[in-house]
Amino acid sequence: MVVRPLDPAADAEPLYALSHAPTGDPTIWTYLYEGPFPDVAAYRAFLESKASSEDPQFLVITDVQDGRQLGQITYMSIEPDHGSIELGNIWFSPALQRTAAATEAIFLLAAHAFDELGYRRLEWKCNALNEPSRNAARRYGFLYEGLFLQHRVVKGHNRDTAWFAITDKRWPALRSAFESWLDPHNFEPDGTQVRSLRELTSSDANSEPSQQFARLSAE
Image (cartoon, rainbow, N blue to C red; front, top):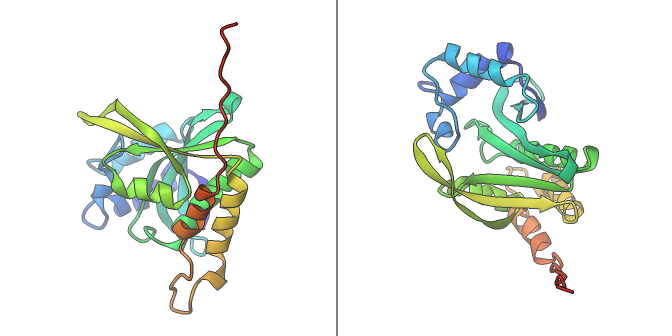
């Protein structure tokens, strides 16, 4: 699995085909701010407008063997001064959904954010109605932090936003959980997993130490 910067000239047509009728799945766009698009030209123009953006940074998920495009994701809400960054604008094609490759892509981006870029907080936010996204966040080890009511208006509809995050204090245990799950020995010859990622990341969440808050004195 490779995660690389967006290339509108190379990516527009294959990504459009994956996410629009008649060959793709247009429901991919249900909870996203943009899309679906009327034609390839409109989608290409959209990608061209995002290619040079520093926040969000649009990335394309591709197959490591043949370079085939499989989905998109961004780093966004990038706050270097506060050590915070978000994974967003996520859509996986049907060929990528519920696969080890999808999990590997999230792992690679999380590892890059924490281990190479030095961020202290990785966020995941989604429409509260988007139950698959909420389930994915929990499976990947993001902890639920709360619900922001009437947070956005998206495509003319109210969006309550569910917030999740991983902090750098939890990341080492989660890194080990991802690595254990992705290990080939965790899969039977028929592809069946021995231990689920949800089981491995839930163990980490249950062992997280409680926060200690200091009371500010009025003196």
